[in-house]
Image (cartoon, rainbow, N blue to C red):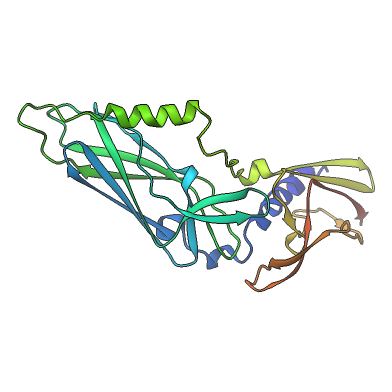
Length: 265
């Protein structure tokens, strides 16, 4: 009986495990690591706040906002300057720690609109090694009363300046952090009756921890794995290890191509 589907299901899960540098249960859920709130200090603007847990940070370039439903139109967010963090693969990136407040102009607002349902997308990491995928959060913000004319003031110049910066190439060029499925593309094939070939295609700028690669058979039906040896890894010097300490770390870049011997009862 072909047990390959069982192998694929288990191995696909294992392939994603190295994204976390320690047990996933030890990390905060993104909603707790990055607590969001909002307010409307004036009829023509809102403010979005994040309380960022100690040991975590948000990427400046990953923040996106949209008004859900209604007729409210938002302008270009006004983002404060962040800290510069040097990343081995992504270069110099701008991040926020501890707390963040973003002001967003309201360009258009119906006079009857009293509430704004805001969707914010952010992406952050833990210093210990885990990078979360993009995370969406929705909040409802009571809007400040508009002017007596019933029309909220517009801020077209702010939006125009933001669009001008993008057209001049001033937009942040930081590369997107891939999802686990994009970063580690996994496939498996039966080479012959005695061998199974596993292949991980590892995206540029990402890597797998050797010590986190574990392989097992589920529902093997009398088939067991023979002895195998993982390919020789690359050694990252003075890197952050899964336990949070600093030292040499064995990792894989580009791909892992591994042939497993099969033993049949």
